[in-house]
Length: 279
Image (tube, rainbow, N blue to C red; front, side):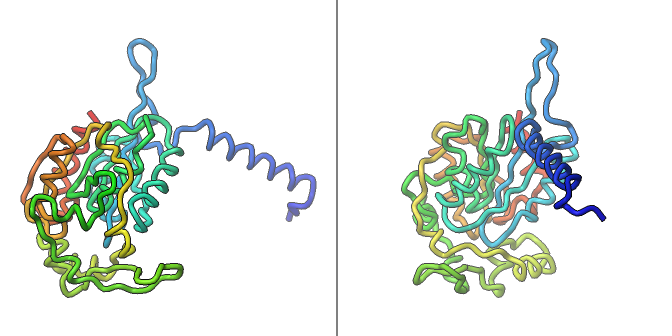
């Protein structure tokens, strides 16, 4: 066995390090089956956008699976971002740093609280060409999730049915918020089978309770073209609030009879809306 303290071992490490630098600096990130670019008749290359999907609270990236499979089948580049769920500006900065690893144009898609994150994370990034909100929060600067729920005269029950558990480093009064499994199906995904929502309730990823009341930063939808899917049967974000946020963002809007998790119950509609933004 060759020791890495030997001359040969040190040489191998240098080769690996050089290769890693070349990948980070020179190679396009997250290549899908279609590759990183398309050749034009003029000999130039036009980069295909990378579609970045951002989940919300009480869920994780796997919630996008039905949409991801459809986008990959249509030969698009896709990556599902793991949202820290700690606050709109903090999570937005995490996303902003993540986007620096992706070459070329980006279409950002946010579900639920993930909409607040894409609104923050897209600011100052000229590569972000479109924002897609799927039953999501398109917060204005200084606005919180709790405040946005009241837009249009709406009301949500979800805050009445949260279980809060402590986590290391949480400020006094904060904690990880879960939807009570006894109410998960009715509030979060009433149009999915109970066998499915039972698993979702047991595996839900919590968000910091403070994230519900933390003000958002500057809103990217003020300068970036936006698309919005309104879920008429949403019991997490009031549909009235979704309409109000879509209207002020001047978003291209569609409405469907769906629960909060339209990407699971109506993945074909969500995929088509994303593809419209891509086009």
